[in-house]
Length: 68
Image 1: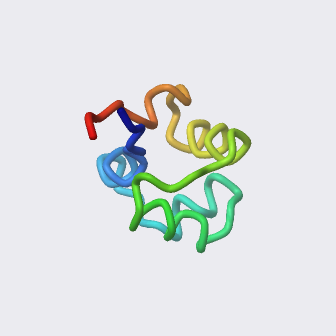
Image 2 (image 1 turned 120 degrees about the vertical axis):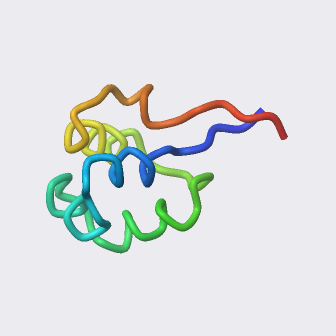
């Protein structure tokens, strides 16, 4: 079982592109770009917390479990 980040879907549902999300979360554009293109990327808990706050959700809402 793997964890898949749903950040792209959550951001798009709120009308946010990568640049807007990066600014809102106070993370680099490159960080958001990497997550956007690789939903299985390793991301620090600090970054996940910033993204969750920017998306007005809990950290647990940012990912889903998927079977290999």
